[in-house]
Length: 463
Picture 1 (cartoon, rainbow, N blue to C red):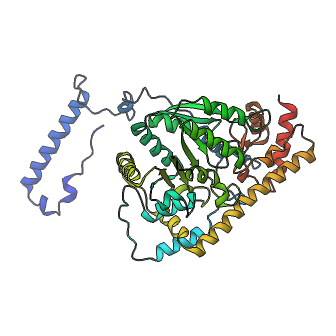
Picture 2 (cartoon, helix red, strand yellow; picture 1 turned 90 degrees about the horizontal axis):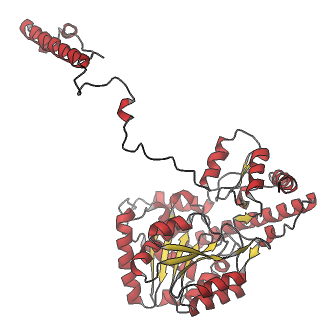
Picture 3 (spheres, rainbow, N blue to C red; picture 1 turned 180 degrees about the horizontal axis):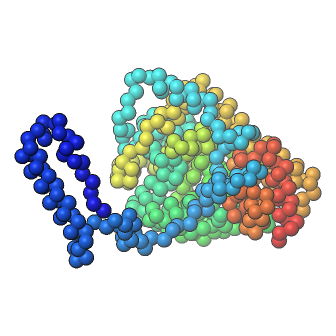
């Protein structure tokens, strides 16, 4: 295609074209350039000619061999839900709190904290240190372990700000892969879908221990203990601090004590994933009881915290990794190595979300307001459990559905199989993960009857 040039005559009033000799000279140069481009374009042996095809530049992409990856099994549920035009559609796959009206919730206390931050003209946007916001780290350790915790009082804990729970797990995993003598981590079966990927990419070998009993839809406690007893000495064990994801099945306090004894007697290293503190029972202390039991016995452990659920800061990516050590000197050395993990990964964490958390945790009035709002979220989820259970019982749906009210936290492991889940999606436009996990936070009094009808149809019509 011939390039388009503006005629010099159109600019005759311009001083640059005031001279006739200058104008004719320009004409000659332009005409010569046009003839050159025309001849180049028509020469089949000229490999430097510009192709008129808009797609030829992409025909031999160095990435042509890349295959399309499957959707994430959890996030892909929302993708499918968004494509469904049905007005009756219901998304029970998303791990995020929703109001009774089905809307996302920003806590009032979070808005207050943000306003305080905005109004503080002394605040700047400078980089945080590699380990993050100091106040946030200290307050996070206090929240999960308690103010009177021996590791805190003896300064033998190091806490670093990370990118929510996922980032905390990844940083902890990479630290262990580099500095711990045993590179095998045991995770419960089943567990959160991202655990295996996070720890594998961090450099650890992932194995599983028995946890859920499909027959009782409860805890396979004996299987759990047997598998931990047979794990090699020094192995890492991932433990859900509360509100196990995806089953909603937690050990009792007495069972936690037996787990602790086995872990310590075998020299295993506990790594807690605490994503739901306060969100499960409505009590920050009750939901941290398992972690505090281990931290108080003088042994070492790792703790990953997330503020996505309990403060609703999903998109802010706010979390912390704490490592409880034997001495303050060891804790200091561990922190120095955590910096070397973080620096080439994301350099240093973002400031805004951590500032929100720190503002709330260090102010008595804001903290109290947070606990009230947190309990309200937990209570609504508990209420949804009871409503769904009563609705299924009133409908006469075959089976024992008492596990719905025995399980705790955001998720319920319904016991529905993948064929029944597919049926509910196709016939009732209800979306959940294929293992039958549903988010109780996605339910409301208005949608419980619709879900009841779908479950009843699935269990009576699909094997």
